[in-house]
Each structure stands twice: as C-alpha cells, then as structure tokens.
Amino acid sequence: MLLPLSSTDNFCIVSAYLHEKTAEVNQLSHSQLKTKLINLGYGFIELRSNYNYFHNGIQNQSTDKFLFIRKANLHDMMLLAEKYGQSCVLYKREEVLEVLDSRVGRVLSIFVFRNGNVSDDFKTAYTDYLTNRNKFNDSVDLTSLEKLHIPTSLESMLRLKNKQGLATAEWIELF
Image 1 (tube, rainbow, N blue to C red):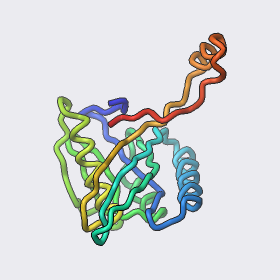
Image 2: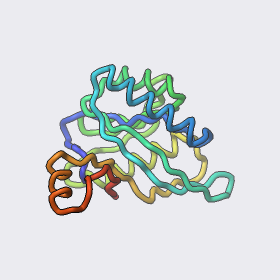
Image 3: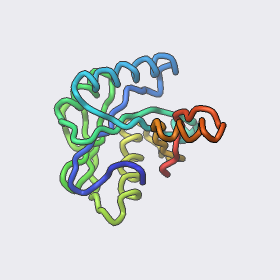
Image 4: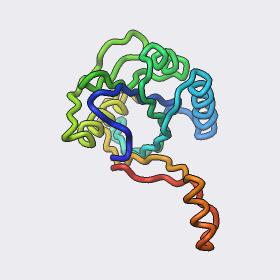
C-alpha cells in the first residue's frame, strides 16, 4: 500500500464526484474541492477508483477521483462533503474506519483497522463507502484504486539524462 496509513493517524477520504453528473461537471467540482482544501491548509493525495456496480439489475462502470487527507478535521470534512453533495465520508479515527453520514454524522458502517492487514481493511471500508455514497442498493465491485504519482525533479532529471523525455504524472495501482 502506497498510502501513509497507520493505526495512529486519522485520515479522511472526500470526493466531489457524483455518478449522475457529467464528466465535465465532476472534474470542475473536483478542482474546486482541491483548491478549497489547499485554502484550508490541508495537503492531500489524489486517488482514482475504477469500479463496477449493479443498479436495478444492470451492470455499470464508473471512474471517480477522491482525495486522501491525513490529519483531517472531521468537522471540516463533513462541511466539504455537504457542499459537494456527498452523502457520506470515510473517516479513520483511532483504530476504526467509519463511513459517516455527512448530514448528521451518524455512523453508517464501522471497520476495525489493523496494521497487519491495512490494505484489506481499507479496501473493505472503501467499497462500503462507495456503496453508501452512491446509494446503490446492489453490490459494488472495486476493480482498482490508483494513486496519482507526481514525479520529483530528480526523476525528471534522470529521464532527461537518459533521453526519455520529461517524467509526467502517472496513476499507480494500489489494488
């Protein structure tokens, strides 16, 4: 797992994507959310998830972008989720991952977060988050979660030296 996950740090997953919106509207909202987080003083890691879901018996595919925020203030994250029309957030506190209703803070699901099984724990909670967030009555099959890797200046310099062109941002599959 290439995310800074530990049993002690809290973190939150937020998104501005809504499956019923167009790609253009989602991308604009996503950019606005990133700007808002920066203005609030938060750093983040950009994630992209690809998943299949069944809605009314029909299989659909979706790709969404999310932001992983370490040491996030829950109140700030709930306000952002509400602003961007999200019904829930995925929040980790102490040793549990919680899917929380963003309107009233009610816990929708809770998962124990164990350092020995971080990837599986996170994947299970994240899949439940997708299900609750999109209000799917049927199942969600997460096919991949990817992290946007921004190359360092050293990586770019090495690529130029080896006549490979500039290093560009790329998606790295986490699971």
